[in-house]
Image (tube, rainbow, N blue to C red; front, side, top):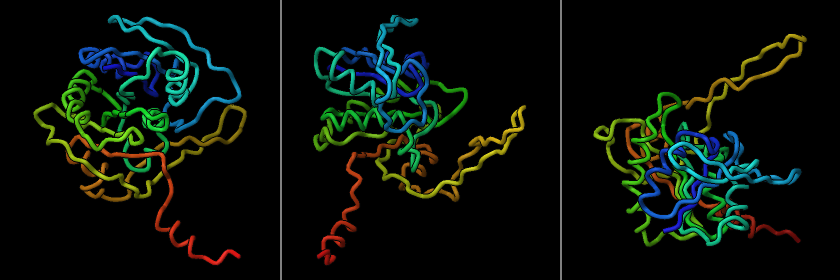
Length: 252
């Protein structure tokens, strides 16, 4: 199996290194990732500057290519120019912090997997539900444990990518795997107003929180309850009920 591994935390991120160590036991792994952190860039691509690619070697024998662009850029340039063969799977992660609910729209991690789907390759985004003291080694082993079941899912078309979130729990405390829909509830965002030394006012996004206890059948709620969550997503943003209604409107 040929695997393309990328992320949005940058090619030197420990989550990527840990995942590489596990995935290379399953097949041939090519690492093509941003040279610096690209968190929350969404599905941005680079148009106003050229993409520069350089080979890098990391501790533990990880060899790859660092790209001065976004996660979506990395997938595009990998499939178009760098890799000699189209991969069987694109894996993006492991991200520091969850990517559930509305955050999926902002996530560079998820966008790399979505870009794979756009290009007709199966993609998986992997995130860990913590922002500190992350045990990426255990998380990578947990993901590789469930990956064969994902690959055997016969109904998984290349146009759909999977968004996987792992609880930051000891293996024995993980309650299982739950396939869940995306939580679309509005988040509460808080900005801090500050003043710089030159008396210019600026604002810093300081907090993003749920308004209420999330539905346990959603990705947010199931992850909070200690489950690995899997949400199939795709790049088609059409709202079909509205489309049907609009088609009945008299436009002439």
